[in-house]
Image (cartoon, rainbow, N blue to C red; front, side, top):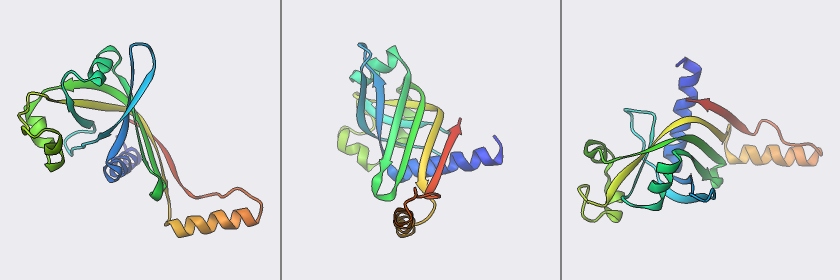
Amino acid sequence: MNTKQTETTTKLFELIEDIEFGMLVTEASDGALRSRPMSVKTTDSDQCLWFMTDKGSAKLLEIKENCQVNISFAQPSGHKFVSVSGTASNTDDQSKIDELWDSSAATWYPDGKDSPKLTLIRVEPDDAEYWCPKSNMFVSLFKIASAAMDGERPTDLGENKKVEM
């Protein structure tokens, strides 16, 4: 991975960690797309996105049938948006559960990290795209207002990058 790829990948994961919740999209057996909010976990040891979920959940059955997923992240107040497409799999790796466990997980799994219901979804990103502002909101609003007064479209409002993983 070259320096430019490393910079855009680092920026991608910083945005994801800042937003925290994403909409995990899977394909149901009838071809319909299903989205649900999920708390994402990232680690320094890999470039994957991790989700804790219940064993036997519909999303696991959908991933088994079609492992291609999308996760979209949005923070409208900060004008930050991320879309990640990747390959999902399921694992019961206890060492990874231990690594990802935090106090928010205890809310969903009161039996703790050894809960028999708990399993992980691992998403290995294939590609991603993000949009974020280059400057603070006031500068962006000034650019929008100036462009509107001139009858033009605003330009240079932010950064849009495609990230090949």
